[in-house]
Amino acid sequence: MYKKWLGITLTSALSVVLLGVGPVSAETCNAKDELIIGDHQPLSGASAASGTANNRGNKLALKHYNEGTHPFNPEPCLNVAGKKYKLTSRVYDNKYTGEGGLAACKKLVFDDGVKFIVGTMGSGPSITCADAVTEPNNVIFVTTGWSTKVVHEGRDYTYRLIPTGREFGQAFWAWAQDKLSHIKKIGYTGRNDDAGRGSIPFMRDTMRSYGLEVPDEPEWLDVGQTDYYPQLSRVIAQKPDLINIVNNPVEEALQIKQLRELGWDGPIRAICQMPEEIMQTAGGKEVVEGVYCLYGLDFDQGPPHITPEMVRIRKSYQAEYGGEDLQLQPLNVYDATVGLLEAIKMAGTIDPVEVNKVFQNFNWKLSNGAMTSWGGKETLGRDGQLEQPVTVSQFKNGIVQVVGSVRIEVP
Image (cartoon, rainbow, N blue to C red; front, side, top):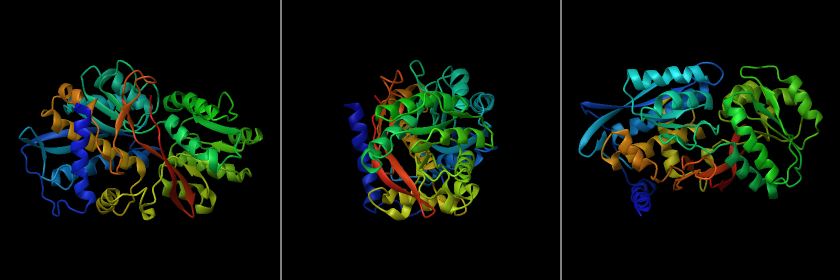
């Protein structure tokens, strides 16, 4: 009953903005008290563009709450049981490593006194952060890490804000059963780190559940590697009908480029987290044409995949960050930040122990118009993964367009 009531309350709030009614002017929060929402991301190295974009999604949500321009929060500041807080973002570079994640987490929690962390990219940094810092100190930690070691039984304060390879795979292959019925055999590569080794078994088993022929092991690629020709040649030699690659934008782009140079003209499936960067690194839109993607939004498509609320956030993101376009994962981070802030308001306190009691049962309406739910009790040991519609996208003439959407449960 409590869970359902929360969802109805916030659904009604969002309907205001979808009808075109809402705050028309932005004010600045002048509250004396500050609430820091922490983050740690890869802000250097090959994944820096993605990490920076994710953090921007976090900061933009905080900005909208401080201004009172979010439909859930029409007055400036975060009002928690009558006490107002100015929201501040604090982010550190985790260098996309476990050691970096641990160091960044220690700074946030022990030096800055952070009680809430939202947005972190990467399983390695997330695992060390949760193991040594956030869980022992009752800090709510919302991350994108795919590995099964990130969210599991006994981790009561750690949540995953996006689908993993399992859900993306289920959505894609459910869609592909009709659209790509000729595909029977898969070749694939895997990232040789915690994220890759943690998610590959689920991805492989998901493909096999749809009757596809998949090798037991992928061709493993080391972090920071740039020459993939040997591994990709072996994948092509398997004569697959589709090649599946999962990596950061730069390394995905290099794989796509090298696959084409090796003569592969068949279908490729990738994450495509930063389409512009992928096109530039791969050598142009012709190189990536037809690649299927986990992520991707074409805001010009309009309904049903693009809502007025998504357009509002995109325009604000572009204005704030020099015209840079909004991608799906920063939008996911934005939505997750909103959910946490609303849970804090509902709890009536910034005590993370009390907020967690609300957040673990909390449903809210996303910018795409869908209601969230929590899943994972059976597969992860606790309901700690956010359930939401999963899109299927494809590069078409230099633009990643949504070609389908499937809601996948996380049992």
